[in-house]
Image 1 (tube, helix red, strand yellow):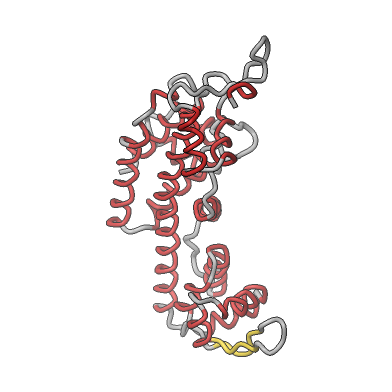
Image 2 (cartoon, rainbow, N blue to C red):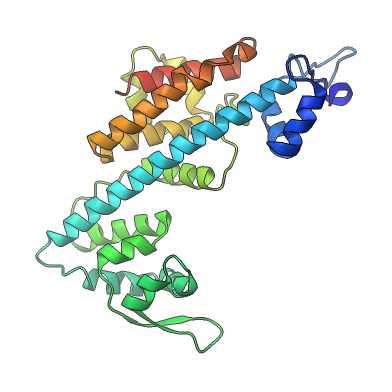
Length: 304
């Protein structure tokens, strides 16, 4: 890496870097963060990275890990809050017993019903499915033959995407006002999947003007934060991971209870003002990274 890529080992020695790649992370995931750094465009160093020490890559990987852990928990908070809200509304609806809506929903979405049948062999959900569904497993593909499942059980069997579908179906069926903001929840769902699959979030923090088009809701939300100017808002929201993080912050504020919200934002603040800035001097010459850190600090500090 030293000769071919121009990566230095001034902070972390080459032997320590080799140990890091053997014991802490692999080369592919660590090297992915190099997208945040520019290359020389001409001269003897053409094609090599500018001011990139291996320690910077390791630091970004570590920050990413800590941030993903918090964000994943916050995504789960949003999902749980929406489930509780939906089940409460169903229970309060005198026209609905909680079972009819499930039968109609699964009839309307047979692929979701099939997915439940396939989950019947799962150690985690098989017990619930066997209790509330009759599954024919005699053929190669398990099939649901009878449904006696209430909504409060179904919500525990659905993926986030399928739950959003069920949420929409219920309110549409009864002509009720739907509180779900799809242009917010879909990015949150994407972020949840990324965190759950341990996907690198901070691998490219450069503005991507024109590729991600933030919705009006998030743009207006950020415009209420005096410390974040219009140009900064436009640049940061053009970066897909940052846009999705902003959607999560917004959704968490809307849907999650105050006590849970306070606990999670305190975790975020501890990260923002603690671990994130521990080695911030590494990135003082990298505007994409340093301005993103500054943006996240403004966003979180203004939230609670």
